[in-house]
Image (tube, rainbow, N blue to C red; front, side, top):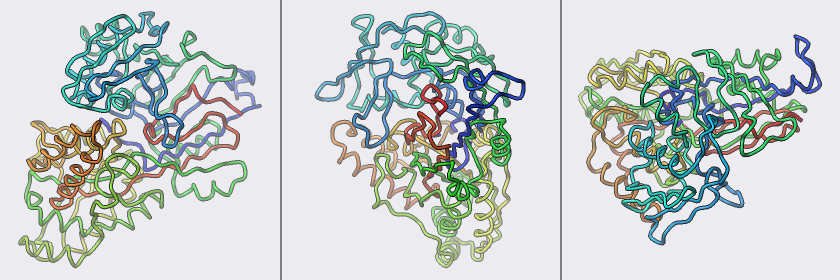
Length: 528
């Protein structure tokens, strides 16, 4: 998820479009030109412009600049995938050999041809040093029989069509750009790009503004009325985004105050859709430090958390309590996965058993992303609930990127509790969420509980080898892994996010897709 470095979007991606069709701009711009410019207020900061290393909220922009081989369609679609840079594909019976046939006539923004060599180089770079390198773990070798054919040979069966449609780590990048960033790691940081997508990066001011411009030679073509320019203003505060929207400084706001969505439902000019997402909120306990190295203490605190209140206040009702780190609707979610409910008596009992009667004077530090309005609302609820069992909590708001870097530096000196909004890289939360968030690793990355459990590791490792060939077997093993998470409680699982989608009626091209719930595909939009 997202976060990646910065999974910092607010709970629910509230999109509100108030397009000023038929109006001139304040500067007297003709109506037709005003319509061609889309103004967006977004929380999406840029950690890196490198599409290979990207694992954060800059995907909001990158998904409009770069393309994968395939796009994953929303649940219920007639077809599970839409061809992108691959026109067709097939797999061997054992799902260990996948062949992709590339779309002819596509060029990168820099004029380089999109061919088999470019695809091979992009994927090998992602596997070698990508932010989401783990998605390519099954890949043993890529061969290119001809200029438009890519063959992926795997070490074990894997759902490569899912991997090839990933939100991260699957972008196909110009060979020129790959070579340039190898020579200069800061190559992208001024806003350069090497994509094939509908837009190019025209302007970038760190932490403030991203301007995307229409790529006139885009292979997908352009229809009359589509947006030639998208001006993104990075605005973390939901209230400010609403002010920009109502004041005409923004046509789209990606993070509106959730408490105001109810009033928008009664506005006859607006439609409000509750979109399912693959995002969920969770927290990590620092298992590398006392007292959180003791599962009894972690279970006690899990029982102390006010889950219902967090959904009511933090999510403003736009969420359902999570069952582990796998959101509903995403493999391998299971309704049989156990979940904690608030039970302060049980929490006190477990704390006493662990040697911390009446809280034992425990003091813990909890950090959350300062940009995240939902976390800002519910972090104090956790503090208040823990106080009821005698545990004091120091709540600290830190910009996500700073929080994330601090957490990865030294577990012994890190926070005790880390709040996180996460979404899977692609629609397999076994190989992502379960692995990324809780599989052991030499150095901390997203496992910010620092948990190392051989039984859990073995289960998720083995389950992943059956996903493509025997999903029921994989599901059963992942189920055991999620039960182990519940039992050992290295983290706690709050709620799966629902995103209220608010738009003027008649807006063309706006759709929900939980697999890309943080993204808006600007090329698909047009004013009514």
